[in-house]
Image 1 (tube, rainbow, N blue to C red):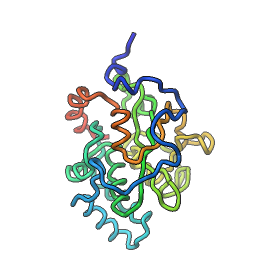
Image 2 (image 1 turned 180 degrees about the vertical axis):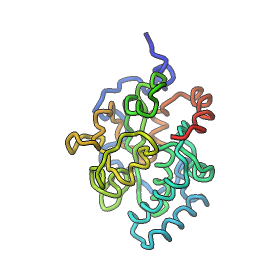
Image 3 (image 1 turned 45 degrees about the vertical axis):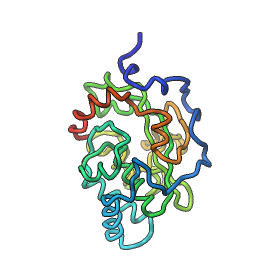
Image 4 (image 1 turned 135 degrees about the vertical axis):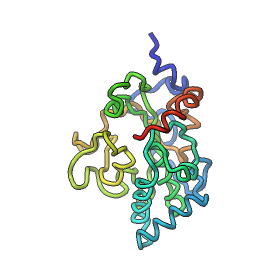
Length: 248
């Protein structure tokens, strides 16, 4: 019997996905870019203001320090909600002051490109159980797999978002539980989570939730164009106006 949660996902992303294999997209060598895109519209006034404030807060031209300051501004001023429209321009997310974890990561990407730091994304399919702690009473409505466009930043070498500000592991102790006010976006500031199981089975190891790896894309726009968003269009149109009012 077909599950309802399967019916509401794009049909073409349900074909031929096998965990741990790179089926589409690029390879480890996939080039990044600093170019603006419809999503990463980093030449917008909103992104320019963010980068200017981050530079002033950082007090240095070091791109990592500036991006850390930008991350703090986004964390404090863009409220975390369960918005669904992945292709929302980052300038719009900034201006309206709320966005999903993915939309806020896109803002950080935009800031990086504005600083001439190339970025790319790795398209990962994450098992629904990763979000069970956030939806304990309604987990049955979650799609079986959720597409995550996980950014990487080219600073000396390619660094995943979670390792931009420190090595694998949770700085200052503790763990990431995907509960409360700490979403993946907040965790980037203090806990370098690991989707690949490179460092054992510590509290930062999320490899057990990874179901498929679709490889690298130069632009997050390309990833969503090739793989679709987590939910199909009609479902997003119905659900987004409601879910973007719900704080994460």
